[in-house]
Image (cartoon, rainbow, N blue to C red; front, side):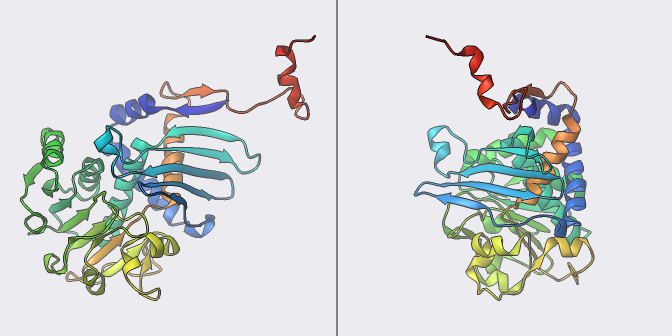
Length: 342
């Protein structure tokens, strides 16, 4: 039998534990796994692109556990009443190949993305941050805000989105939770006075939702919307002024903001900062940029944490996913009792 954490169970676990508590725990798990980065099998995700979106598999493994996530990205889905991103994930034992955990990952991906952003900010942002600008107020926005409050104490938000309904949604969701939310008339207005700027837009195009003129010294940029070739959010000249940090460089070269720059453009993998092998922010005036596209190790961390936190609880059920005949060499025996003889 395989443990199964469905949408209802995931939502109950997160809500009853507390969203910020879960996010803080995820940051801790991510930090621990990023610090042992060399132990993991690493490869860029396998992507199947179409004219309307992308479907991807994101695999990784350490010595004992294999994990993967199935995820899509379809920007036009909301117009059809569907979500832009959906996902599920699996953990399996390396020793036997048997799956042991199946989980919804639409909610969990939002949590792990926010936790990864917050992890990077704890290593790269200035210590005196008080205000975050959010350019893009879609499904990820609330999770980002809660993660940054849980880790950096930020509760003042300046928000801009091309869709006024998205900004109204964000304010309606976060103001009752104690956030000071300013709805702005433009991206330039939103980033004015912000210590951290998060960009998270959905259109799969080379855009410049953040221009060079909008970025002042000392700011930390959290660019999380780029996730495929041909999709960027930052004016390219920002990269030349910033110290750029990534998850897995080979994948980010294909999908991140740095796809706008030559293959030898200098970047630093975040895990090396977390282990002390490389410097993060070196001065108050540095512009630090986390060029995040999402990587399988973060999904692995999130799945492992969810599995360990919900194991043996009422949040999970069991499903009969693996055929197990009494004689492992007699798979046909599972059909025999139902067969009709003539």
